[in-house]
Image (tube, rainbow, N blue to C red; front, top):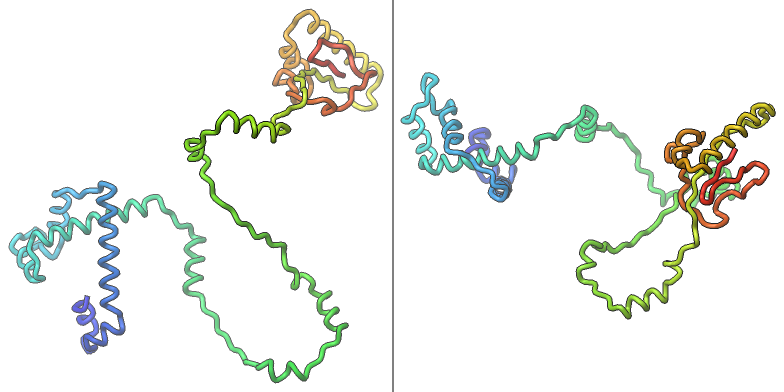
Length: 291
């Protein structure tokens, strides 16, 4: 690294190069990064074949004469940098491993134009700023502000002084998946817990119902109401005769429960709307036909 920078900055002493560019630390950081990536490659089982190393070396223009790989030139260049062919080939193998790891990391990563512009602005945007420093201590004791002025300023821009609600949260992470294996409560402990939390295990009596709904618009004429009554009576007759109620609901019900066979699910006492006797027709237990 010193030789590289010395070749660029020929008139700067080596000590100054080290101080200015922190070459020792830069070299150490580079070696550490390289070793970490190589360890990751070995851990992932990534390998480089001998053919890949051979192709990389023979394809290097520094080892070619007239466009063809020259073994003599190759050995000459390698020895000029105080390396054996084996050392050089190992370094090339490491470079290929590092390139493969970096390729795996970068593969599939996409940067949008908006992200690129934002990063450019973040690193390149500059502001030309001029300012005058005014020591407040010179004026704080001499300036007085009336309460009316303070109130007027506050009312003019209340949002500026608004602080939103804040919540401080503390939590403990519990791995529920790992807990059951170590928990072995006794029958007595289970019974005691149930006795202290019995309300958590109680449930109101509930029923499951189905219905068939016929819609009647408000203000519909009597003949329309009579027509719907006749249709409801016909469906009710089919239900009493043993026709599957769910099938009837899917065919005739005019609300969202129809495709599900009119199923209303389970509900406890007083959970449903009160019945309206003048607008209901009797039907089998556990089902309703309304219009």
